[in-house]
Image (cartoon, rainbow over all chains, first blue to last red):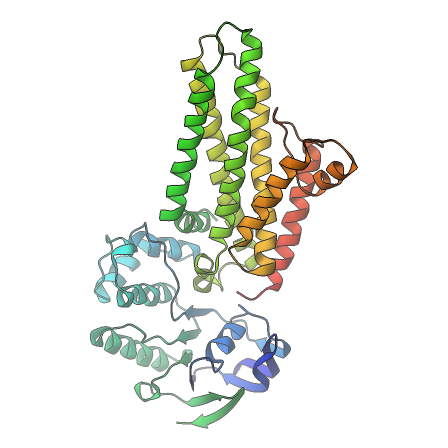
Length: 200
Length: 231
């Protein structure tokens, strides 16, 4: 079953064309890997799929599924604790039993909930973003450079999470510089304003 | 919605805004004390009460407008606007935008309430014949409208040019509105119809209805622009 259908989508920033006339069909339950150099358009396409940015041309159709996103990096509020931040995000997402769920995920990812975010390293902040993603169950997951800043323990934990999600039939779209780390169904190569499909 | 507004507050109350808020309150209280103690106690007490309001209101008005411009540009800056990525499926951009502005305006209204209380308190302590004037209260209410207006004006410019230095331009427009209002002519009226002006008695050049109308107009333009731009 198709989950996202792109028809001739184009993204331009003033004079620069990031990609043009790209058509593609994302199917449910499959894992897609986006690879390419920095600035090749991987994040731009993900943001377009998430409707965070508008495509300059073409059309997109998405099945009515719940989706969630792990960005590469965002600024987090410095003055509050990890637990309070996650509980708040969970409440916005409408998660039930949020307190217990947060405590359990914090334990699983070896993160102290009572620490203020300003005290955390880059890798620890990345773990917060991973935990917020796991607070609610979704059908479609977007990951933008998810391994960035993670130590080896967290990296392995994350890769095992990806395997679990794949096994449970979720659709995964991952942008990464490390294709060897993932087991994927299809790979999209981004280069020189063009996107080409490859297979595992 | 409560959780969403709380999330906006978590981003709004950062180190920079806390320092600026404390500084602005300190300057305001200092202004109140200096002007209140400088009153000539032998003069007519009613005149003195009006003088106390007028002499402090200019400073308070100017720093409040600056604060509003800063707060709005700060919360809508790229680094403080990316958490929408985490909740994009759950919250529409319209709701996100409106609640974000609500968070800023709630903070500004609390700030104006604190200023107004400090104004009354300092007057009560330092001037034996201090009078509670209803007009001063309306002046502070109008000040909150002025802050909201300049906050929205700053947001409009900020969205158009996407550069934080725009704070200077918007603040300069406010300063210009004060200079131009030293004379009353057609140019002044035209300028005041675009940029709100609050005089030394805390009264708008046009009626406060007009101020609210301009605020709604600016809000609508900002919303349309926000929805059309990439995040």
